[in-house]
Image 1 (cartoon, helix red, strand yellow):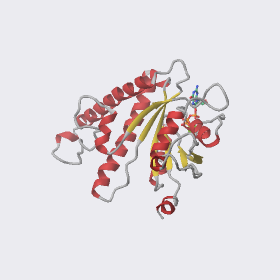
Image 2: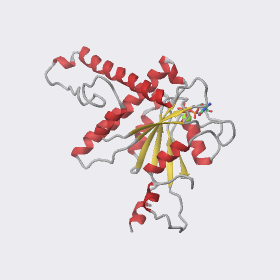
Image 3: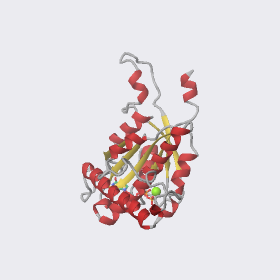
Image 4: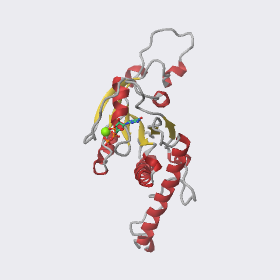
Length: 256
Ligand code: GTP
Ligand code: MG
């Protein structure tokens, strides 16, 4: 009975991130098993994917080792979105229009964020994305809220020799998100809004993570119901089959 109810809607994972990070390439590889040439995306697209038999799904944990009955690996939709600044509203629409979103995959180009401009762009977009999820969680607490959505930060293009290793991608993004957070709250004060007693101010509600903390850490998102993982890989490799993506498959399997 449970299985029947659960199979009604195919769950989805939503791809976001700056332009050129590799979202469409990610979708193509996960849906078709091959990589193809991509063009700057202008609208969202969805593709049906299936967990490979080598990847364990959450359901597998409850199966006995001796259970040899054939099982079909679960299916899910990947939803690709354009990364261009003016088209980012599509990503929120993609999430809101789906009832069974199991996770958000934020793709970053690990080489692009070794430049100051690339880092700032990724961190600002990630800050806004996480704040959106945080607010969604806060509002969800009072009403019968939507389920919380875990986030995978996919540190892509690890094959490029100028790319930062995954650990550094994580700390650089944390440091830069801290700066974004500070400057947003400062802008808030400078605007004079903070001077008035209440008029429309919600400084705490617009602060990402642990309020007034001196550092930003992704782990601060846990208390807001957002579980963040940073895992490295590369969609493109030497061959046609793409590069190293096992960790991302693993994360999808755990959240499917
Ligand atoms: P927008 O549609 O503009 O938001 O970009 P996108 O995130 O969809 O990027 P896309 O998938 O189109 O990839 C941009 C470029 O990066 C393409 O030339 C890809 O071939 C390349 N690319 C993607 N992943 C990798 C990777 O892991 N390694 C390398 N070397 N190149 C990659
Ligand atoms: Mg694209």
